[in-house]
Length: 256
Image (spheres, rainbow, N blue to C red):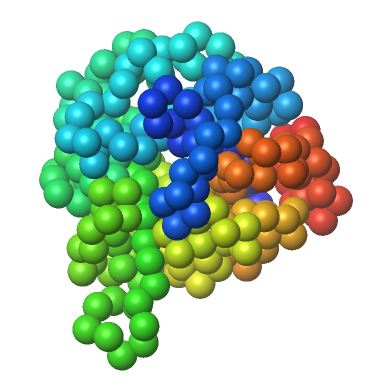
């Protein structure tokens, strides 16, 4: 098994890190620069910065917010939200971002994945997939891709979409369960495992971390290559060193 990555996520709105439940009811968490510095110091393997209202508000990523974080990070740094073109990615890479994460734009324009992979290389391209569960027996897929911060269904089956983004050249998948997001009741293991077993690229589990055991389950049951968390880190319920020590003691390889 490759070393499992621990990734804090900075969901940013109006220049502040925020966190909600099921993508709504956002509350203020902390300053993004302060958070980035702290997480790097504590041993985060990577950081993810999501400008969560960029797509909903039909605008590009706020580069001034990203630049401030770029200036202090010492680990690989991925940015998502409002990225809809090669030019958008170019701008981010020019200020020091390591990876671009596309979500709604990937669904609307799948050829963007192929184009970006060819221009920048797979290692710089993350496709974020947000999903929700539908009731058994409905006309929609059991695991459905949603876009625009979870506001819009697509009718796409998550596993089929994950296979397609891999074929088009995505280097990794950031998979978030809208149903589990912010609940602290655990990752959606059914969704994570279904996607991780269907593709050969790394899958990061996101949405629902509440305990150290949840991180362990995402790796052992969900087959995730990385675990992303927000609330538990932002509000001091868990620390990155604590998470790594726990996983190490359970036999999971991590970078200490």
